[in-house]
Length: 263
Image (cartoon, rainbow, N blue to C red; front, top):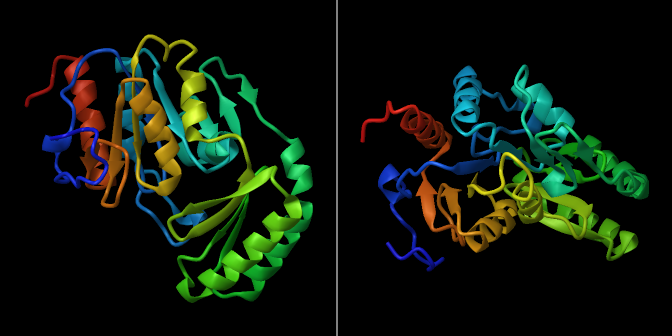
């Protein structure tokens, strides 16, 4: 398979994956990657098998496992409780390293007050639309109301025009998001790779959405393996079919590191 051709759509099987080697560091998206997508963010459930697999993976990699997500870190901790992992939340706007130290940008939250009100009013008045307030980023989910997409887009663009160049629009799967400019998932991965236990390892990033492309680009540049979940054009050279396949692959790597893997 030609790894550098983004137009190629590989088969969605474990045959379309890099061979296991020791020394990997894992960066994992959540929604659509570790968990199936749901009609609203608070409807997503993390299965016990995923928690168990991440624990095993952490032990197998000396703790080099981080979650890279559009969700806020506080939300991540609730989803994965009692497990607490290094994490980059809100597309890299906030980041918690392996040492537990959190870097965030609370000034962004204060600038979003007017947009926060406008999006909340729209969601309250539109059946099926869900407003998600993450503090430093704001999202409108229209999975339950596809016909509302254009109205939602116009509203978000109006708010962005008022906010100016310090904020930008992030498209996702049935979601429009206002977030501070200048940070993304790729930058978060770069930051992790400068710290133990991630440094000197080969980065692996698994994600499913347009918001993950920055992470894929960073991992490609760093000589790691970018893995796209599901169909669609991407710069990731490798593929997995869905969240079930992701779980299986992570379990296989933990088995490999424990000398239990059978090809």
